[in-house]
Picture (cartoon, rainbow, N blue to C red):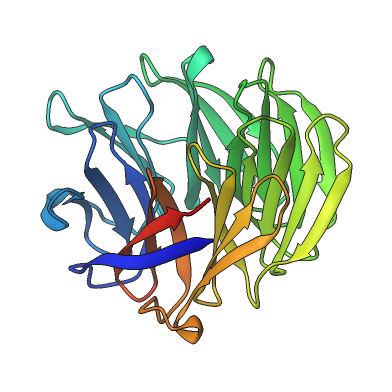
Length: 303
């Protein structure tokens, strides 16, 4: 039994919100979208703190790598802005792409940053000196999402050409191309135990892939419209999906059963437009949407 209650709604964005990221500092959330700045919020007070810095283009991706006092913001312009928390200012602009940035992740053991772009490539950067190391030519079309296995040996890229490309993190050589989705792959995430990869697509399907054999384990007709994001609970065997159909769904990560639908149709005071991204803050689930709102859900998992 899963019980969900809306605990807070944060407003202030004047346009759709595309992305969010929890800070390394507990109780702090960052959001970005089709606004003129990247915004910092307090999750302790459920309140606006400040606009971190101005942006000249929409923010599609935010990433705060563990162990570094840095925030990376990927823009529609192709630039990645680097904010240094120690200096409290923007210190660098990474110029590896001329097309929109859709996802940013880091490989901790290699101290590297991965940046995925509409140009079909993923650029690799040194986190220590912020110099570009390599460019991976992944797809003839957009790379929408990055998923890194928890042992950091594999990285998956979800692509607009309907494929998922699996690479070896050691040398960024291609291991496998996965084909089953019929539309662009918007989300890829490895299970915390590393046993499988889950992908979500514009085709509204979830696909479960064996992380060793790369065989398709299961296809789930998960939503009415595109699956925009997938987020595993940090400690419990569940994951949540966000969709263009304005709903959030919570699934068992061990049995792939649907346990909860959070939507207005189900009586929840939820989003009225596409839900673009999710984050778990303990048992709080945070969602951002085209409706310009951030909603914080308290999720109770009863035995």
